[in-house]
Length: 121
Ligand SMILES: [Zn+2]
Image 1: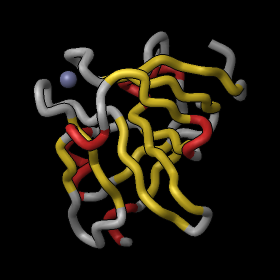
Image 2 (image 1 turned 135 degrees about the vertical axis):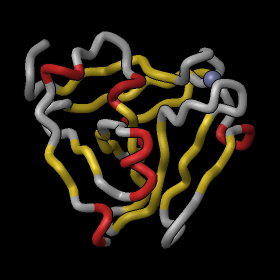
Image 3 (image 1 turned 180 degrees about the horizontal axis):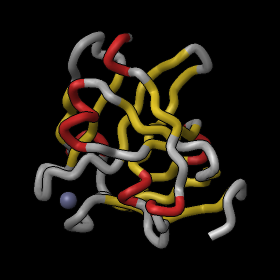
């Protein structure tokens, strides 16, 4: 895998009910130490809505977990429980946060995530 390259990835949950396509550059990924991330250890990449397409599944049918400031909708599959993506509204509008571990064909051990201090926010 070449770093610093924008590519379109297929991703989704464990059971396959949720499937999406997303275009992103995995040179900039993060991990976070907030109470929710510390339990699940996702590696995250962020994309605007035009770089994210749900190809299978319906956002309205997913579990929607919110905590703390409730800015972020943590959408998880009701069948397998995996949160393959989430969305929130930031200064630049709606953004999707994708769990890189749910993208196909990614060697996560080759990534260099930046650690974000979500715990203190
Ligand atoms: Zn599932």
